[in-house]
Amino acid sequence: MKVIKSILIAVVLGIVYVGIGLMKIDNIKMSEILLANTMSGVEFYPQYISTFSFEYIPIFVFQILFATNIYKHFCSASIYFFSRNANRIKWYLKEVTNIYLNSIIFLTVICISEILFIYMFTTIKIDDGAVIIAIYYIAIYSIYLLSTTLAINIVSILFGSNIGFAIVQGIVLLSVSIFFILGNYVKNNFITE
Image: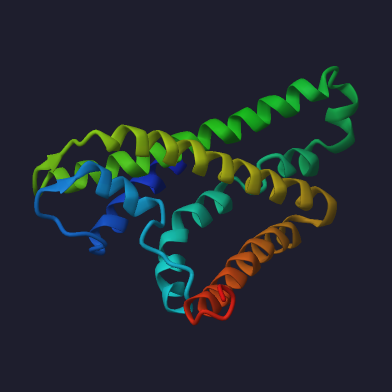
């Protein structure tokens, strides 16, 4: 049920993401559609915070959906389940694989829904770089989603779900904020000289 819910949300995010008007619609290359998902137009200057925020929404939504996937087992089953589970490592790896596969499905559905939505209105040129960009995009972003979602789950087990989500997202957004601040100094040649 959760997979179907995440697929539907990914379809809606893909359509909304394209529908807002991030790109031109005339004879667009498939690589341009895929690059729009990768935050390729975001430079690390404070002026791009709103663009980054908009492009971060799909990642944030995935983390909301799966942030407490493993944590829920600890809340509901706790000691009873884990004391009777013979192979806890196998169970944990199965849960991690589940999150990873869901992240791949989520990212792929977003891309496909964007491509299909644009295809309804114009022609799409399939270029050589599109396949490579798609592979890199799904590989890099799925690993990022897996690592941050696992971090949220682990911190949630230690401190509770709300605190776990806030701590991990706070660290991620603090890191991005530092890049934005430093980007302004690089732009003004304070750091490069």
